[in-house]
Image (tube, rainbow, N blue to C red; front, side, top):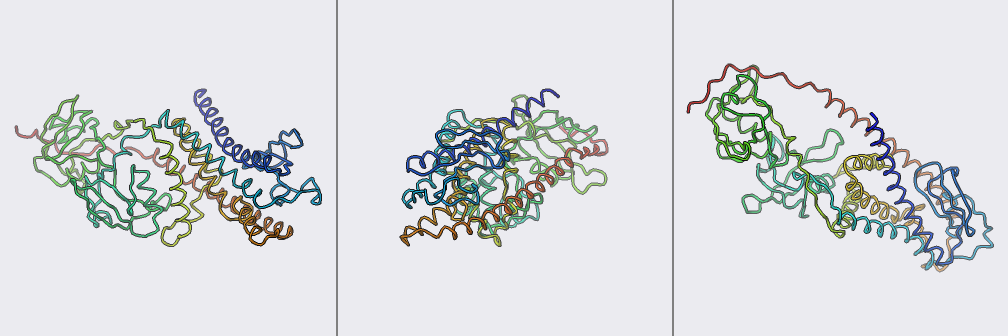
Length: 470
């Protein structure tokens, strides 16, 4: 109990540090460039709402709010009253800022996040990041009968090279490219026994999140035997707990469902198994039998794939991590702008609640994973803030460019009304994505509870299986 409490406090503390470091560095970028461009700065705030702490230093009020979302630097010359509140300085006392001064100030926050992302990516490069070895092997194992993937000609043992022409390096990238593809049909380039083949598939949608996903399993997943059932064909053949299934009649085993499929296809037929037992290859002969009230032949041994939870440490270069983060953001925005074909919409976005929960989960797994996630978080914040939407930095950059072209400032009242409208829209959007975060979290919690509550199936009943003839 105490250990769980300590673990929770540790993870929560790291979440606060990493999330607020991202916000602080963004605002520090604005602050630092603003000072050098001669802008009037009234306030440097982390978080919103009434102040928990504040202090005035050098004419600037530094404050910590009570609502742990976002932050801002109050520049009265940028007309951001809708976010920052009314300026303390009368407008007639403020020196107008030229667009050539405004644009660097507005761009600096995102640039600071990119620099922080690069610095953290360098740390990840040195310390490495843990990955499940299975995620790095793009071989395909089981392909369900009747699936679109099987109809497209995808076979067990194929290795995925590209998705829609884009090279993929792990299963995370495969899932991302499939889920965010603009086309309803996904083109896969596969390596089949040393030659490239193409397959076009219409992916089904994940029942939990509604996103498109390939209905195939990872290949090359070692499958081990749990204790065989009493009087089962496996027990009669000499299968032992811990045996790792390598081959069935000369065909390599690529996963648990692949093994079941190959065995089920041979009812009452002697079938040669090759297993790995204490480092030695052992050949066995088993005769699959029909279970009572079953539709397929079985050999009567529970399968254990947990033995393959083998982590490897990889050292992605900073360039790789940064590029991967930017490409993911580009794919996500592209998918959001084409919801009819991708099925991805605002409902699938995460707000602060979802981001904090995801960060908390990866911290519980490994701090190095949290560092890699923080790289993505900073790139995300940098890109989102530069979108040309009023209230965001990109919107104010757009106003500055318009001012530069017109050679006169946009009327202060126009700026104020526009910002007020978009602040209201932004608050509505944040409430909406937060609601979706909570609904999604409840759905995941229900699914996990159902998985934990699922009782193990009873042992199948076989007629006493005779030992195979030698």
